Image 1 (cartoon, rainbow, N blue to C red):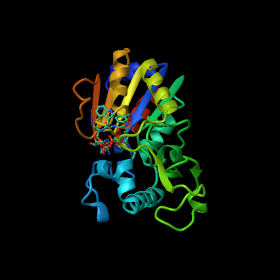
Image 2 (image 1 turned 30 degrees about the horizontal axis):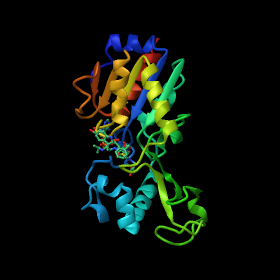
Image 3 (image 1 turned 90 degrees about the horizontal axis):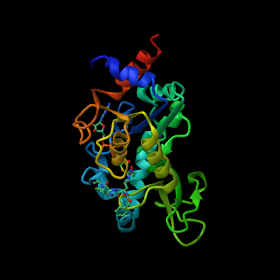
Length: 246
Ligand code: BV8
């Protein structure tokens, strides 16, 4: 992986507001399968996009519930990696810093990031499918999924499924940060899921320098001002080291 380009470093050092969008690639080095990695086990024959929908949950509640439970256990069993830790350090290096994530694994908070904008919810949180009441798994009756105390429906994971609107306050905050920032880092995301994928393009239209940090090419690569090709767990600490060098 090449060093951080001097002009990118200069942009970062003079930035008043840095915004970061992360995707599943940031959690890959913690051992969390990325969203489009091949599914394993019981769900090997399903595409994630086909399970992460309200229709799939209504059609096969136990299958979808168990998939989320299995993902929750694997997330609880892993640790944040050097990429998460670097972003937690980065939040104190700029006058304003906004971390926006598509990830539902809660690893940014566990690494010490504050005020994380979770665009797609959090797999460790639950709510009622019907009344939307927040629910705790520790109080849940037996069942896959458990019944909600409201008596009308059942627990569901508090994540945003395909075809569902994003939480409006989270989306508004993310879009405001994209419009306002001087540098926008897009890290570990395939840049295919909207409206999150629009954020780096929106930032660039408003004059921000857009940096893609990704192991592979994405639809953003050709348009990004900088492309740092490689693992986020290696590249993000390099950026911290360069910023703190003198
Ligand atoms: C909505 C929660 C209004 C659930 C998720 C406009 C245009 C086209 C389509 C649409 C559009 N507007 C809406 C749509 C439809 C849809 C959509 O975008 N579909 C896509 C597939 C085309 N969007 C929606 O439905 C959204 N809702 O817009 O509401 C509406 C309402 C009704 C009708 C229409 C519109 C809701 C989207 C949210 C879905 N929920 N997650 C769950 O997790 O189970 S999205 C899911 O994908 C995850 O959150 C994931 O984070 C996200 C994006 O994926 P990535 O994070 O990018 O992960 P991926 O595996 O794809 O890529 C990993 C990347 O990392 C790769 O590039 C890889 O190379 C790289 N990498 C791997 N290792 C590393 C690495 N990089 C660096 N270092 C490494 N070590």
